[in-house]
Image (tube, rainbow, N blue to C red; front, side, top):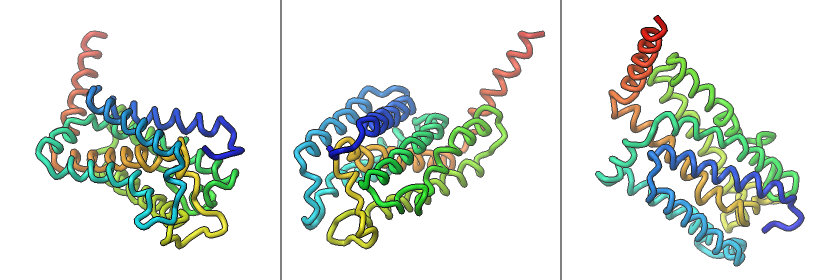
Length: 247
């Protein structure tokens, strides 16, 4: 763990990670296999990180790859296989959308880590990281798309693509400012925060789940042509029933 870091920062981020896992678990219609895999993955990476394994940064390839590659390969397999695509198509679009609210406490955590010199300023909303906009806009998009029925498929697609762009931006900044052999940014204050527990959960779990949520939403909006319309017609029927009962 990072020395001299107030405990509340670790607690807030730990709870944010668990909230992310809970949202995704809910999006799977509470798949027991999913929650076991996710919690097992967090436990494994916690055990590895507490040994100081990821703080050694001069290896080629970086040990950090063990945090991110398994999750990325899992996402690729999900999209490349028939059973994986079935899993993706059964995820709940509404929950995948509201999940992104967790990006607000993530960005607040990054700002706190900057204050305590664990990440560079460019990784915060005071620098080049605008990902907090995704978290702020998520409940607004959710409300107008799924509660008020004012946003259509194209608006949701556009929002998901923009938010993926914001995610890619901060991931690139984080990687290029980390103290690896290929570091290009922030030499005065490298990104060391994500090499320690519990912040290793950001690259190994939170970011992959956020990315998967966007990709799954985009796939559903593009290829499951009836899913979005079905949801709105379901809401409409409920509204009509409520009016009928009121009469």
